[in-house]
Length: 161
Image (tube, rainbow, N blue to C red; front, side, top):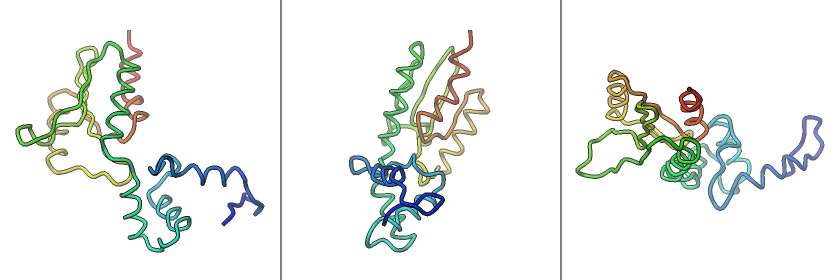
């Protein structure tokens, strides 16, 4: 199927965008504003996928794992906040449940980032409670899906004198 522009003519720019939606076998979620838009695209451009349920399964398989987004966020913090200390919290049987995935301290202020996969990540009740506790204690805890969101949160802190 050839993508069309607003006037109905073939649009090579749209074709190029369609070819780049899948990069390295991983779904490039940044091309979509809503989950429904992503599902519609998946149904339209993948043979054998004709329902939202099948599209959902495909998206969950092709979307990068949470660890991919965590690494991108940590890399952004290290590159853009040289005076910050940031680390990924260890998860396991002996760690406290619900602690945000990434901890960052800048200028003595605590930031906790719970990282979720775009469109499909869901907070657990424990994570919701922990975020509320951190906020009540004076820290900042946010649910994020990308380094862009982290930048929007941290840039005001980084530009303070």
